[in-house]
Amino acid sequence: MKIFAFRPYIFSGEAKDYHSPPYDTISKEMETELKKSPYNITHVTLPEKEDYSDAQSTLRSWMEKGILKKAQEDCMVILSQEFRYDDHDQRRYGLMALTQVFPADGSIKPHERTFEGPKKQRLNLMAALRCQPEPIFLLVSNQNFLSLIRKHVEDHSPDVEIEEPIGVVNRAYFVRDAQTIELLTNSVGQDNSIVADGHHRLAATIELAALSEGKSKEFWSRCLSYICSVSDSGLLIGGIHRCLEIPVDLNALMSRLNDLFTVEKVENPKSLADITIYANGFYALKPNKAKILETMGWNEDQVYPALIAREVILKRALSLEESQIEVGVKYIHNSDEAIRGVNEGKFSMAILLPSWDKETFIKLIMKGGLLTQKSTYFYPKPPSGLVLNCYEEEAA
Image 1 (spheres, one colour):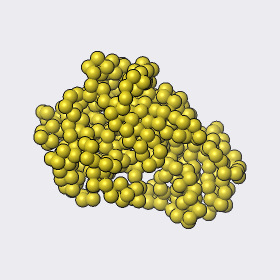
Image 2: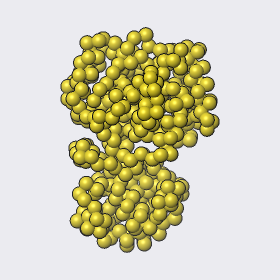
Image 3: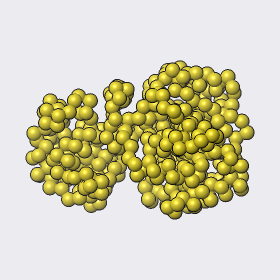
Image 4: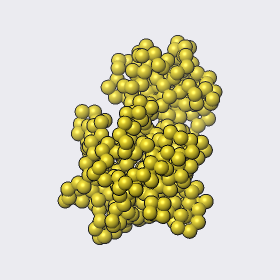
């Protein structure tokens, strides 16, 4: 895996509330709130116009006014994120740099399938901007990488501090020292990485590189990335819950599930150990693995919660077609929000998925497994807007 320092564009001190979560985790309500700030990155990552002309003119205006300024020298950016989870204080460390993505050398392994529509949308936006406005999220296993980052944080003061409304405190450290940059580069040089988030952005960047020539090809051959160690205790991998907007006969569903699961009505669980259906109460589903393998014709690697939810519960037990799933199922990462949606009548039921065991996830992906859509929710997310990677000729 090859990583590089770069000269990012950074919001100046004149810009307030410029950061946001990644574009694909933002609800319409959150988008409206974020866009109240004239310099919020969502004006670029979530444009209103289908031809992206508003995003293009906004980005250019920010550069011309000095709201976005280009760094004076090459750097990498270490990000420390402090947050609270399950009543415990947590901290995670990561690095923002450019990663070589084209030509593909097998060092970057996706874990989810991509779809042409979302990929094309990101491709067209980035092509219009000639910019990578937010990073993809990569995981590496090298222990020395994590040690180097932690030591730098311990020895330095942050250049930027951002506290998000969700309670995550982000501290950014701009690394300009050539020796430290070389150590960080070498620490992952022999590693493969796993794509945590940003599969469509990555696929779009690779396609833009393949379609480009000269200096433009060189630019798109490297992707703005946030890189984190899988051994970092602050790396959390949650499940994404399925919320149904279509009516469900709960009794009929439970009878259809009894042959493949032990179904048990439980009290409101503080943490999810099993796939749990919520509708007039909580129903924990303990899968009969042998029967699922036999019935579905699967191998061992396919028995994971998101695929069980899709293929066994939605398709087999509820007899939903692909088109019905596409329009009738919403994906929510916060279990409290999913439960509240059922209580308020927005959803007929919620399929709540447990968090991943990190070792299980890593083993599955390193074996070449591609998970079904919306299988994982990595938390916390790196904030968008901290740094942008823009094509120099466009920004001049």
